[in-house]
Length: 129
View 1: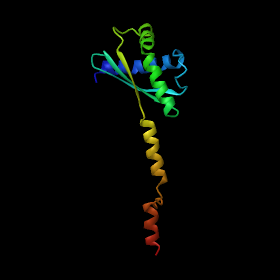
View 2: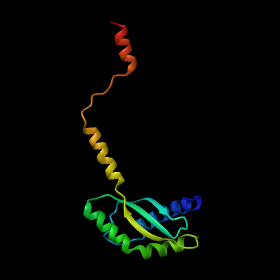
View 3: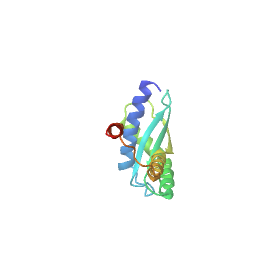
View 4: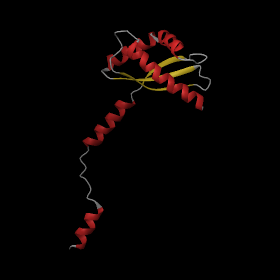
């Protein structure tokens, strides 16, 4: 990714997040929506917007559908807010990496592994014998 497309991606992420929180009035949009990252093509004509939604599966799907239907509105808002030549076409994608990470952490926590003793205590115990 070029430096310019990285800068535009960061700018889009911030602005899209604000638009979703304050401008999109669709009741299907869950209150806890985060724009995790935005990936733009090198020519900045297309952007994938990865979102995370806190809630159950129906909240996630409803929010994704609402954002897809609000794409025109969001692009229009971006046009007014940003001073870039063209606003990229947006594609909203549900990002479930946070949930997957939490599941992995829960699995690790569920393992019954006793803690290891620090090496310096083991050496003292052997020397004192």
